[in-house]
Length: 474
Image (cartoon, rainbow, N blue to C red):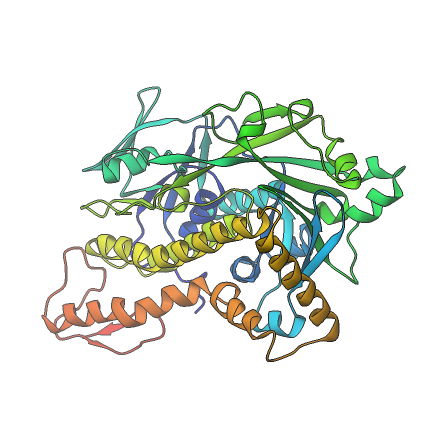
């Protein structure tokens, strides 16, 4: 049985704080697993922010498994390469292309999608699965014994488990670790906007730049000294998402305010780039801004009781508008749902919560390190290091046109196996086979069941099935 169709023997009540990608995706998967889920969010409504997002194969394989293939085909577009362009001159530097035969080994497509389309897709799925989502509900305090949350209006809501998917400044994280997340401004902010392609009809050059080309599904990255712009076509080819990263030192009025509700007028932004890009960025009247921060991963993702659990940015750092920013949250939700589809007894809660951190922390740390290194690659200033990078990108473009070269392109295979080839469901299932079942065997050998265990006969039971939920027989 697929983990997305397995229902837990023991159903419990969850409160998820935060209705972002992580919160909605987790609500959907936990409801699928037979649990009762309520989502609370302080926002006034759904977070349909501007911009787009990447869905690399490690994300699309999860979404397809969840049943979203048709919606992805409707709203998302495939991509196979990124073309690097000088932000100052407009000259093409090189191209990084993911080979079709190599990408197929991941078992899924590489796509880009408008953020609001992804959000709405997950919102509808969560509601249809049975989740109750409440906006305008600010959680001010979280308790573990018993699990409950206090809202700003004094309301107290109880559950069997509280999950913090409420971002880096998480109220649930404070309850778990005892203090707020430490953060230091990274020094850059991302400025995001959506450009309707119909406004480009009188500019053939920009119209062609922003058009989705099925014969060469690539997207441009303009790279410069401590700045870059990444853009791609979304909404079935009708819109163009732009994400501009600029140093905070060059933008007047930068404050500590964070989040996607910060609106910045175009005239405040120092866009002085190559002519084609300049014309493109001059079109939006305003941009949404989100700052980049250096944040630490939480040491503990669950409290001693196992009834409070952190996930998404509440648990581990993510940069906004980067390749894996939404993927890590989707992976988190899949691992969480798969683990808790195995719930059979109350004393498993802390065990499964600890397993979630055990599975996700190494993965998210590794991806965050790769994303940090990627900034160093696109932000390099003039000099030998930039020259070496440009030469490498040019060589990759030339080799890509020649076709696959086993000796020169082996790195791509290794990268795909490690990053794109990752399967969140398999990781959780493998953990269950290695450790979850081992624990149940140990309980069985001891000749007793934990309290409230849902299997009626346990004494002398033996494990008879290993690939699916453990079946015990008397």
